[in-house]
Length: 295
Image 1 (cartoon, rainbow, N blue to C red):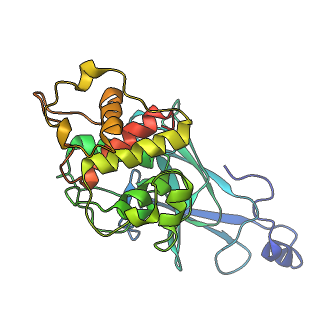
Image 2 (cartoon, helix red, strand yellow):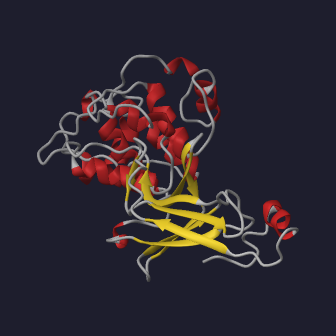
């Protein structure tokens, strides 16, 4: 949709001084195959390129006064939650950038506001795990990234089996609070938010599942202002390895079992002493966000 006043730029008024009757030419190219997705993007439509020019002059129109509303049909749109799909345009200097976007499920379309002539595409953007990553991890990541940008793991090789440090975990939590941080102030900010007791906890050592859950339950309390006291021993009393959990973290671990944040195996093990991996933590984080009512 081209709204009235879209082309009334300085160039338009300059042209009007020479000719009161200006005509426009619109050219569209789809697919515009010269455009390739960024490493963090998955195209969901073909790229369409819009070109505008004055018939009375030479050269293309590069600026507009009011954004152009572009509707892009997306197959299987109901598989995506609101916000998971975006429309993007391309800048020669900065690459792809996101446009204001609305998803219209009734029409199976995403609607973007194109801010200047050029390319537009509907895409999912974020950390894109390879297909070798287990489905349950990829689904948790999709649900998180429908709302939050996982800045700390974006534009990096993704290994769901990688062990995690306390700093790695805090970065992901700050990604979804969301709050700014850097390598130098994250420990202090985590103490201020009540996520950890003291800055000395943030080291380069890999941490276990019980410590990771302790941090997540602190995040749960930060978000909900509720207590986290285990009260359903029928859910966790049969796990024979709970004695391996650090005594400081065992109640948080039991509460997480009660709330479904973590799950043991089909027998009697819940693995509190295992090193936590990136894939497992993302699943725990997504379940915690759901428990908090955030997603």
